[in-house]
Image (cartoon, rainbow, N blue to C red; front, side, top):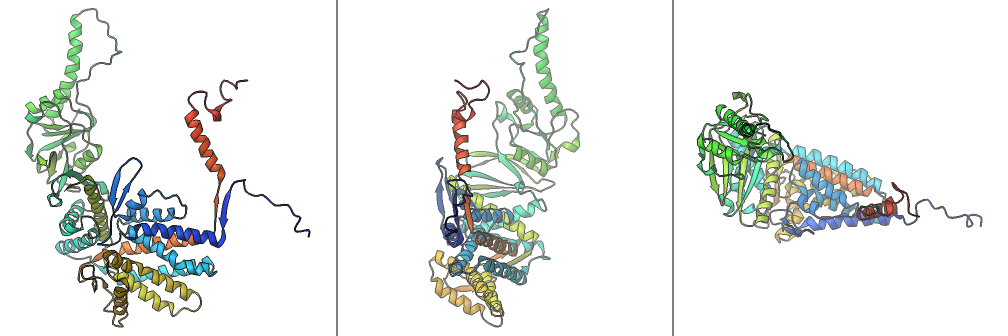
Length: 562
């Protein structure tokens, strides 16, 4: 009786929303599965695209997992974890973003019946971590090294990796054309780590095959003044001067006051302004440079002055392009025209201005340091070119990773099936519940080949049975077999050159397991009402903060009204 009379203890603020225990965990798993279902259909060469338009009316067509996850405005706190792993996979390896979200969703789906049956989530987490460790060891064991080969062989192998990545993109129809272009671009920048050394310029019009690679720098013709057309548009072995100053006639500020005792002195003040600009231009010419680029404006006077002396100039060049020109030509950006020595001037074999579509491009090729390249993309619609740019970014990242960690594995779901078989076999040697959990982890890995079949319209059950039979062969000859997208059967992925860097798979398994374990380890969600009201107050004060200082700020400053 005494226990019934005890007062209720209020611990949290009124209005706090708490949900805990098994229902909360199931709810989080369902949210993550719903997110995985959104990107599920974008996997593989026959994956569909998503069209997303935001409140501003911008339209994006993409099948890149990370792009879709970024654009989806997900509010569920547990499902946001999947967005984060997609972003981390994109920044770390560049490709496999859809794979990582799918795997995480599938691990949770397989864990759900166990949670409903009352299994403690920590048991699941422990088994999943063990399984992921075993899976990564197996991937490393199955990986084939492409190091130590000649440059031509290496180029071929890297092009195969790039083609595998591009086959699932919108530009998959021209994957061989773009794959070789990407490989050339990555090899051109060498050991340079900065990704922005590969510039991608988009020019609407023409078709995809009109895209080309410049071994150097190319950028759109900048705003130009009168006299520009008289400048020469082609130089061989020119010296290049890079500036970060304005070459314009600067008039005095309106509020400047000069008192003259003699009217004749007025002319000398006007002349001084002209002498300053002429002095700057003269120093640029004396430096011996034939191409002058500046991040700030080069005015009409300077343009005409340079044109008379057969010098090409371009003002308002973007910071990124100027840095790439500096890196490629070996020049240094100057903030003054005094004491320009030969060491700060860049050089290249050929500079020319040429027409691309309806745009004119300044192209520097044959650069001495050669650690930069530019891909000029052509295509019909703007959305199409933007998706092509995202696809090339993925391919560039993959080729860079394959160059650094020179091991590849068979794609097309082959590696997933082999790891799944290995884990099932290993599970039989374990006593206790762990056997079931590792088995479910192995089953989850099969989602990749199954989804590849579903997206291509094949009978997934039939293809998976064939794959299981092939991978179960004791000789181990079936290890490289994956889904054959063209025939709807199975094929040797290695022989068909469907390759991907081992680091993509390792990262995907790691990130997906971590995300699944993180969601499984949460058993209570507390939603604090204070934070919502605080946001409301901040918004109200921002709106009402003009007149009397708003309700939130009354009583400060002048004192309250009585």
